[in-house]
Length: 357
Image 1 (cartoon, one colour):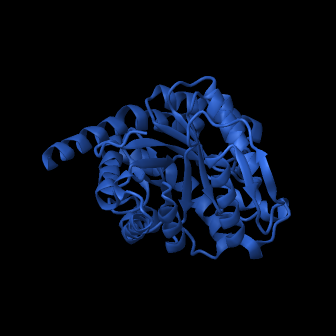
Image 2 (cartoon, rainbow, N blue to C red):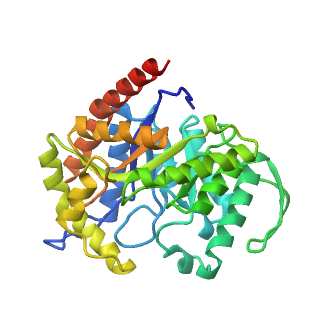
């Protein structure tokens, strides 16, 4: 992975939304949404984007319950783009199978696979796979330990409290990359930042509300924990994932995204007790210091450069996946991110780096 200080990876994250249209009630089929995902990854690769991530969900409004399978389908039709889960819900999965799925993806993609491990923002996978939410935290810790043990060694001797022990058995196939990249995904808790730092693992923060600069103390915590554990903080990778849409003009992007964004936020908000999402909240989030990356390519690039200055991120995921927007607009946004936004960001970061030197 490139570690130049002026380099920044830019990509797409998606949950493969198949949400019913708020006006008509019509919904895209899961099968169609999955086929669209492969088209998106191929386009993202052609547009020069660095990474494409698929989140794991097990509910009717999302199609991506098996990210590795979708990513493998796209691996054969792409050359450069890195392919990651965003996230793998590790507490309700088996780390052996997670490793095997992604090491297989790593092989078919010639070493482009990554795992983003998290606890998941939704909890439907716990009852589905027979786990108790009471064990939410300890399941993640134990299974992350096992996943990292498998990554580190062909033969594994491991014992834990939830999964049956493994007595010096091999896990195959081994990944093409050594080691297979494993990121920690965080919604913004100090504990997850400290854990990732201590382990020396790259971290991704989901910034879907408030001001991204609020995450600066978490980045500091992460780097301090890493340094205390003997890792070089300058070599750590930090990513963020945020919603947005890139249009021909800022006004066009803003008008296109708002109804779909409002419907999605209010659906999730009803489950979590959030206040209703209105235009004022949306416009505030679109402002320069807000968490929504909505606008023309120049404006979105300006916000990404600001994010880099405030948090030192090395990777940025734009989540453009709101299924009630026509898919052609999602495809245009992906193309603009790769061909227009990314070059502006890279040129500006190179200029700032040259100035610093």
